[in-house]
Amino acid sequence: MQQRRKSPFAAAPAAAKQEEAAPARRPGARLSLAGLLVSIFLVAAFLYHEDSVVKPQPLAIAGAERARSSPDLRLLQEAALPHHEAAVNSHSHSQPQQDDEEQHHRVDADAQPGKKKKKEPAANKQQQAEPAVLLDAPPKPSGNISGRAAVEVPWAPEPAACDLYRGWWTYDAEGEQAPLYHESECEFLTEQVTCMRNGRRDDSYQRWRWQPSSCDLPRFDARALLERLRGKRLMFVGDSLNRNQWESMVCLVSSAIPSREHKTLAKFVGPGGALNVFTATEYNATVEFYWAPFLVQSNSDDPQVHSVVDRVIAWRSIAKHARHWRGAHFLVFNTYIWWLNTFEMKVLKNPRVSPSKYSLVDRPVAYREVLKTWAKWVDRHIDPKKTMVFFMGMSPNHIAPDTWGGQPGAVKCAMETEPIMNRTWVNIGTDWRLHGVAQGVLGSMRRVPVHLVDITALSEFRKDAHTSVHTLRQGKLLTREQQADPRAYADCIHWCLPGLPDTWNHFLYARIIADSRSSSSTTPASSLDISATSS
Image 1: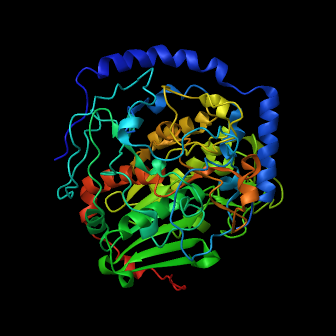
Image 2: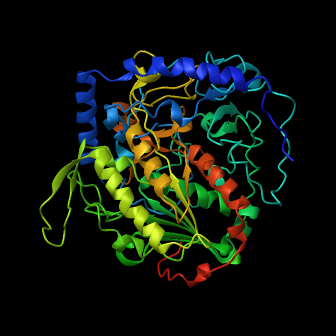
């Protein structure tokens, strides 16, 4: 059993500091008008051009509630690709034209060259960045971390007593719990996320582990998860960030399947090619990804040619996509980054009557209506006794170094090698209004419980984990000249693998392992028709 790491005297001071820190952080966090205009220009340029396919002291962070009331208008920053330093294993599979969302990135090529890149010995890293303000004061290290014991019995935190998303990041210098797999060992990773293979020199971004403040995450056991998935379908639905997370899950489960003959990957299958399916044949289980960046129907639904600057959604039309979600035993939804290129959304309110007539609707209003359409479908068509439903929080972008106290000359997320330190919260431009909308809609669902995987706040600290300049552009690896120009080419939206999305999947794992429905079987995964070339 894993040892508890919570300090008995940490909770009270943490709560007090949270109340003190919260009010002061919001007023000065907005971008200047000039900065906002520059951000809009950068995002627009990316949308047009990118449519091809230490053990240091633990870092403390607050829960999402600290920022819900801060609806910044620096929203376009979120569309500027995520940090450059994420690592993912790539394979021979060609990447679909890189998603606009993924490519609204920023990189810090100018980040001071003197900043360390290579992983330092634990003794040296321990000297670094002691948090100045802690919302959840991390306990001091107490001996060795427990071994990799398999999860043999269901485990779940008490909902009222344990908030998995409130805690801190701690550096695992020995690699005992992070990373959960190695880039070179996962043949299914695409070149978009294999940062080490693509030239990143440090792997420290792989070694940060999330520690909840009032409990422990269960040890991740890929075999235990595969047993839960036996005869079942786990499906991710959404945009390229959910595809990023899907790749992570594929690597996590495939690490427990040594034989290459017992695992296959089929891409762009089914009507429209929107489905990607990993199959663990020995377990008769599938881990799937379905492309639907807005969940509802839109003019960006082609998984390989979807970079449309002038985006239009039909907020009441979901059946075209939803018919592919039926029969899945675990559904993981997301939608966020594709909403950020404009402040108003173009909406077809009645596509059958007026297929070319749209209305301009404020982003939060349109987002709410889309989620209401989605929630109605879930309530009508999902059997909560057979299917678990998750909704992922917003994956943040890091394109403005000034918001986290970046060094002079820093560019986007380029050259970042550590999480944001010494902060209880940072205003990096996440549109927390949409987060609030999602909470409200999910909270109104009565028939089918939907778990909000609240990754937003804890992910905002990970400026070090983006693919940055170690990725693709229009289906090709960035050249040295392009890597030297992070302002134009850094992807500060997507994440390296192994990396941050593995932590997101660890949260899913904790829920799936604990839930009794996981042991009940329904439609076998093998009943899914996936006629396509396996890789």
